Image: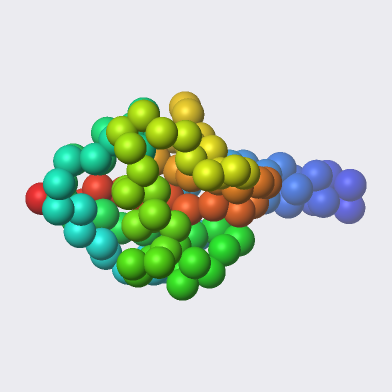
Length: 111
């Protein structure tokens, strides 16, 4: 009976953790993109964007010296600075990653 209960709990946890691909922490901030941008081949039309981080601090991503601002300053078809990559095929909002478990998500939430 204990084996069945443990297995049921384990399967429930695995099932629960695979649902909800969205962020698990509150957003850092809402930022405004004032002109249409292309970052790593991804369109970012002007508007308001919510930024969530994973394994990195909000301070590293937000603000004039933050990564998202630096990425916006790149030319339309420029590569991201090493080791950053755009995670193609990611479910949901565009994601930029530095490595396993480190990155940020930029989700357009309004005009």
